[in-house]
Amino acid sequence: MARTFIAASSESLSLATCPISAFPFTYAFWFNPPTDDGVNDWMFYMGNDNDKTMVGPSWATAGNPIRHVGETASGNFNSSNGVNAAAWNSLSYTQTDDTNQSLWLNGTNTTNGNADSGIDPSTWNKISFGAVLRASALFYDGSIALVAVWDVALSAADHAGLHDGYHPYLIQPESLVFFAPCGGLDGANDQDIDLISGTALTVGGTPTTADHPPGLIYPSRPQLIIPAAAITAAITGTATATIDETDVVAGGKTIITTLTGDTWVTA
Image (cartoon, helix red, strand yellow):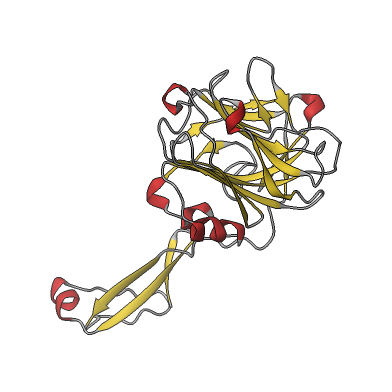
C-alpha cells in the first residue's frame, strides 16, 4: 500500500520520537510526485526544530534533483540525477558522520563530503513524512510508500537492492529500527503503524490509500523444514503425522511445509 498526501490539506504521518539517536543511519522510501509544480516539495524529515536531515524534489532547480538539507549549509546538496514526475521513484540516504553523506535516487549515488558541523542525532525527537513538521511546517503533494530506517550504514549493494524493489525486511533486517508500509498494515488500509515498535503514527489530515510501487520483491512465506526417518501416518486428507525425537535426530529425509493463512501445508 501507499499513502497519498495533499499539501493544501496539511496531510502527514509522524512520530514524536526519532528511531535513531546516533551515526550511522540510513533511511529509504518510494515516492510518486504527481507533477512538477515549480517549487521544492519536502517529503521526509528526521530531527528537532533546527538540527535535521530532510529531503524533497527541487522542482525549481534545473534537472529536478532531490534536495537534501542538513544542519548547516554545508549539509545541503542536490542529487546528480533528477526526479521522474508522475512515476514511482526510489530514494535512500546514508550518513556515517557529520561529513559523509550518500544519497541514492533511482539507483544513482551522489555523495557530499562537506562537514555539516553541529549535526547531532542524539537531540532528534521526530520523524515525519508527507511533510516536514518543524515550527514552520512544509508539506508535500504526492504518494509515499515503504518508509524504512536502519541504525547502520547500508552498503552500495543494499542501496541497489532497495532500488531493484527488495522489501526493507530483506535488507539487513536485524538493523531495521523503523518501518511504516504506509496505507496501514501490509495488506490493510485501516491504520498506519511503525511495525518495528508497534507504535501508531500520528495522522495529519486524511491522507488516502494508493497502490504501492509495482514489481516489489517481498519476503517468501515462512517454511518449516523437518528432517524425519519415519512417520506414523501419511499427510493427506485429514490424516495426521507424528515425529518423535528419534526421527528428528536420525532422520535422513525432509518434510517441507509452507504456512498458508493459519495452516501449515505440506509441499
